[in-house]
Image (cartoon, rainbow, N blue to C red; front, side, top):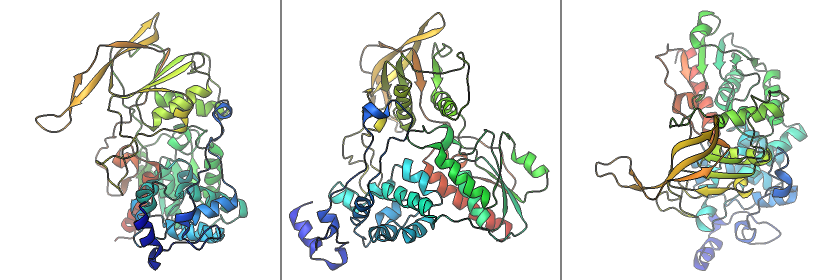
Length: 470
């Protein structure tokens, strides 16, 4: 920030912010951003424990003091849940942890999830991010608040008065859980049907334990069960089957995006080529105690690994491969390398499309962009490499998607394990009765956990309005 801009802020009472560290100056001018950081690489790659560390109480409250309490809180605008960050940051700064939790709970039913895995849209819309590049640590503050709430007993069991109506939720991912909890608090008897053996959806089976320990999910499910939500596992059911029981007044479909985008090129049937979730879900199940035969087990141990896809799922594959003992990891992406630091095409306060380096990337990975995959190569039915080609993108004279053009000679990347992490296909649903509601990724296609939670809350309101005849 330029000196004259700082002077203007210091002289403007409405932008004074909160004093921190015993200084009379606003904390956002005197206290630098401090993140908890990650465990050392040499330590964390040997287990699946959460990589992110925590700050002590004093440092955490000091970080909360950096919130400017802006006249226009763009963090609130950017958050799909409408979290009131300035309010609970102020309470946290003052050491009023219970108040901070109550303020956070008003908008976010599961801050223990978003506090760990949300990309923090609010931080990229923070005025401090615009002016100094150092946003308030909202995500870490959020996680600290909810963990203190569980520790100190601020998370209490609520027993809503029942209205006599039953609602079924199919799918127990973040959207389904949010819808179930909201409807339960409104007085409905809610039953959640889950095709897997435990609740959580992609929270449990798609996100590695080193980002989200599954005991965190179990803790929340326990609270919901005590509050009256019923869970039925290993149940693959349809809305038609549920409604035929004539027990439920409405059904919410929160089944996510179950179909991953595949890569149907020569050699796809070779052993060792897998969809990303085949690896991630199996590894999470192994950590939960499930056993697999040697033939079933997908492992990167001692192998050169190629990850196709440059998003978060690909990053999760990289971290998992390291923990399984891989020899090397390469990640390729068909799209161009994003700008570093700033992208004029996505100006503040929008989410910036810029280069992202995750904790998994820091653990070791060769990253390449503008690479098209041509063919999987193998011997004796096993994948041994992938033939790829550098490409470029040119504007389409007819408009629409740019045109892909060759930009180099084909080459072969050695790989004994290939993981396809190219996203998911938006599901198609038949026309549903008026009392069947789509929710989360099942309605919108694959998106963020925080958006799924927001959709769950919104869908619960729609169900309530429908059943009340409004």
